Image (cartoon, rainbow, N blue to C red; front, side):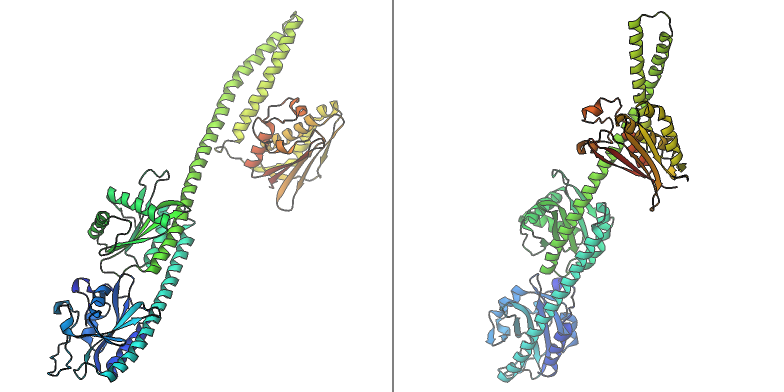
Length: 589
């Protein structure tokens, strides 16, 4: 009864769900059919036969169970066999295998009869599926009567061979189903754990247990490619150890991964297997490297998303471990797609993070620049206005001179308002100076602002109504900044409402814990196009009537910044020629 030579005999038996049924059949042959040893093997994807059940002799069981034999050698011997129906018999004199190549040989002396059983005789029943594909073997040895089986014994053995074939197919189907369930669970765990990660290190950390356990691997590593596709990327180890690959192997792996991703395939690299896309020299380089780190085989998986290959995943197994199955290869390709998507998400997140950081730095620089320029302009303007006042107080100045001085003063004061707005804009946009919030009575602020603008409203025959109860309406915020919000909204309403128009300002508390400030006018209105940029710094309306009104283009931008930093929001409802309504929602105190 042959098995592989000692150097390759033990590949690590992989028990399957059907082993009990196979064992019962083997035991039936030894107990009922009158044979000393029976062994049942199954075909594995790596081209080897694995012994799954042995009965009848404890020494044979210890030596044979779990061992693996190359199928090619067995098929070559069976070509010389006598055809006994389902059974194939090779007399010892036809075998090419020497005694040292047999895994277990019974210690018996052949009988001195013509049909004596020789310890080197081979009796095997190839077990095939409905398509005629070899799926396993039933090997029988050591007849109780010491003779080669006659017709009656062969019929009994054929019955057991039929049962063994059905049991092997059932066992393999159950193994396949169990592997599919196991690998599907692995893929599901990887998707669930890796998809939410924000770095490759975390992807590896969370996916490694599922990959190693699901694929029964010794270890793993991932190589990623640079985003520009020009560099060799990085190699990441899941357990924190450093994976140092020779530059030539890194290059080979990258090229192979891109080709495999294009073909949507994975590949196995192991001694004695075809190297596929690799040259003989490249494959041997990889084999030598794997041997140096104690690895017997690898499952090489491309990682990608869409048409882009992003890297490769390498799953390792030790020397003499079971080979990689087709089911594992198919599942690994699915995992490669899932991890590729996770890597793509990580890169998108990292790009977004870098962009946000750059925008934050740019915004900080802009705020600092505005504040610096505003401070630098403030002092000269103060000096200019002071000297203008001195000049205007001089008696006897000609009329044209006084007209020029008046124009200069108006220009300086307008520039001063711009500087003041810029300083305020920088202040409310500075993240290092958050709001010192406290309860603020918004009703009182509205009444004060309306009172201060009463002279302007009366001059232009505008009616301003304050709609608020007698009770306080408390918002949570900074009183000075909220005063500026109300002032800017009311000033705009007065500016853009024609003479004789009506303006209303209301303050109420809402049921959801907010304070609502509403400022409505019967003014020019705002087009939908202008509403999209209304709160942008220095934006001026495209409406000629609005452009003719003086302004810095910063008022509503300041309002929006203040509202945002208070945790509130502002919305506008407007129609050209029918006026505008601004609604501000702020947290209630």
